[in-house]
Structures are given as C-alpha cells and as structure tokens.
Length: 404
Image (cartoon, rainbow, N blue to C red; front, side, top):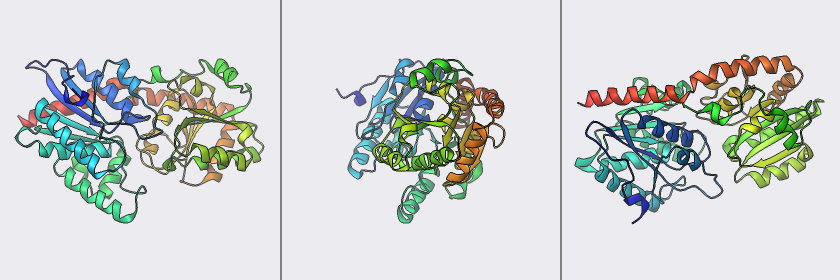
C-alpha cells in the first residue's frame, strides 16, 4: 500500500483534536523546521497531527531529519512538489482530497504556496467531509519577482480566491502580512502574525563555544575576519552579490575569508564567478551541512543579500549565535535584523553598501561583540518553539470555539 494511502497518525480519542498539516516539501529552510517543531510540540497539547509532504526538487537538500528526530511521521504524496506541473498537481490534489475524506481532520493547515493551493482546493473537493476549519501560513510569497507579469497576476487572483475560502490566514512577519495586503490578497484583519519557532540552542553554538575548534578545522586564522553565508544557491538569494561585495571588502584592505555553506543549482556558476573575481583562494565552498553550529561559531558576521525573504532562518540563527548580520531590506528581514542594533540593512543589489557595512564590522571587534550580544538576547525568546506552540494552540482553540 502506498505510504500516502495508509493511516500513520496516532490513535485518536474523542477529546483530542485532529490536524492535517500539508507542506510542499521538507527541504532546507524555515518552513521545514517550523512544521516539524510545531507538529511535535502540539502533540503534548492534545493534537493528533498527520504531516503530509511532497518530494524534493532535483538538487535540493532534505531536512526530514528534523522531523525524524522528533518521531514525526510523514505521509508522502510523490506528485506534490515545488515545480508547477498541471498533471502532477491535479493528481496530488485528488490524492490529498481522498486523504482528507478518510482522515476527517478538525483542521486543515497548509504551509508554503504550492501546498496552500493544492491543500485548499483538495478541501473543497472533499465535499461534505471537508474540514470545518482551513488555515494557511504564508512563509513568504511568490507573487512578486518570481514570475512574469501575466503569471504573477494570475497567481494573485488565485490567492485572493483561496483566501476568501480560508478560515484563517497566518503571516510569519508583519512585513509579509503588509506585502500580501498591498497585493490585494486579503484585508489586514484577515491575517494573524505568528513568527517562526526554532530550537536555537540545538541548532547553533552559544556565544563563542566551539570557535577555535571550528576555525582550526576550516583552516581560518584566529585573527582573520570570516564572512559567512548559509542557504540554497538560487537566483532569489543573489549569491553573486555575496562574491562582488566580498571582492570589494578585500580591495578595501580587509584580510577576510568567505564561507559559503549550502548548495543549489547556481553553485557551478558561483564557483566560476569566484575564479573570475579573483577571490576563489579566499572563498570556501562548503556544501550542504546538517549541523550548522560549527560554522556560525567560525563566522564573525553573516551576509544575506537576498531579493526576497519570508523569515530568514540563517539570520535568526546567526543572531542566536551572537553574530551580527548584514542583509537586504526585503520581506521579513527587517523583522529579524534591527538596523544599527544587531546588524545592518541595505537595499537589494547595493553591493558597495554590503562591503562598507562588513568593513565596519571587520575593523571594530567591540561593535561586533555588542551587536552579536544584542541579537542573541532579542531572538532567543522571540523565536522560541514554546512561544510558537502557545500562539498556534491559542489560534486553533479560538477557531474551534467559533466553529462550535
């Protein structure tokens, strides 16, 4: 029997609440962490959750190990994934509708754009067995900058139509909410802001712990300024800007090394570009890493020049590790990085400004320490998993009470 067609959810009792949670895929990034922590944490609050996920795109790295470590079973729908494919998307929708009819969840909760579309249409197709409550979390959006004008316009119309048929809409930051409101997806009163929750003490090294060992392993001298970047090497991350800014930082006389942690379709071009810019000898391409703590320990600062972000987990983790962040002022980034307090914000594409802010940090160790300490103190409670569980539990019970 296919894994997606068998019931792997815990036994349900009459006083427990049944959730069907859907995400397009458990790839590297905040959404995969979010659903894993949320599913495990709500178990102790009286919820039985079936977590549904699709398949990774070619070259993507899996974060299913986070769910596995928390004994979170995952029901796979192979046709559900990142890429748009009318036939596969239709099959995924029909299979999910069948799962909804069988599971009869009290709440359907979808995460990310593709799962939000497939899941909410599947709920409509479930007919009389449709869940009484449908919730969708926007971890960002693809309604601007990802596709051409025509396609983006069609997706906006689809999101408006789906929003009108959704009980509650969640945004992971005020900036994501405001952007969706500006795009006409729904009025502001339809949204609830619930920030990510991450096991930060598990994911990153506290303060300076492990720094000497990590630098020795990577071959970085103790007095050399280490710039870090962690993520998936795709166009939206503007990783070429990392290399250009790093070259300008070096030209400014800073003895620096660049650590690129991650993988993705743009990696071959980035390595070629590093050769072209003459920085390949000072750049470490470290590939995908499950254990990121040693790398944050080795960094002096994190750079994040993305053109779009929901809530950047790498920035949260860097601050939790006591490292200042230099990032672009896009999406939910200003909700994570406080200008002048725990990092610096610049406009997208402003590589000179990226290099300038990094140079300021390189030349002022006291500033780095002060900003890193301020960031750690602020993000630990703000992005705690316990806070996430409280927020979602409160929302669920409010919606259930309203639904009778």
